[in-house]
Image (cartoon, rainbow, N blue to C red; front, side, top):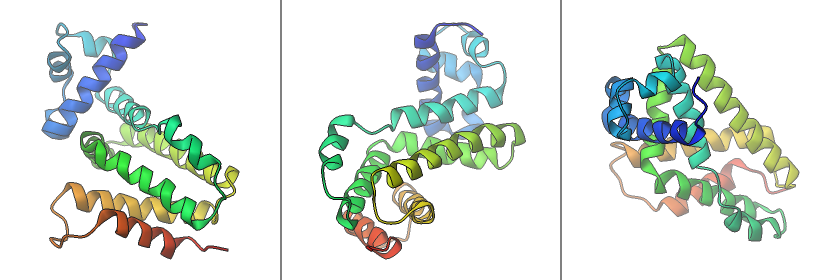
Length: 190
């Protein structure tokens, strides 16, 4: 595999743009080359198979959605209460909805993984690592709840994001208020 990490990142970012705009069916190595402005064949040099390309896009989504340490730093100094969990989850929702192309690309990848065993294995590993990191962060921060509450929050926030980015319930609601209600109902404030 070519060893230019900057070009690999540029190709992955171009692939995410194609995936979010054209869906999984529109994502080809050639479409990624064109979106990145690189010669034909560049993407296939970095990602030999479609599953390798799709798996790399999943990893890149999480890199791009990573939290800003400047936002996390003041939160880390607060008392670990349910109010702090609410603020952490609000920040997650803010990142997911603030970068809709990344959230849509992740939804596309998850649907594609349901049909492609090779991608399912790659993406499942990426999602599991992300979940495990979320649980470790939650526990290490001494926040109320544990792995089960983090899992339930994942389910709830995935649904909230899906509702916001696709034709949803059709009834307007305050995302911030809904996020707070979800956290307070799913996480016990011991």
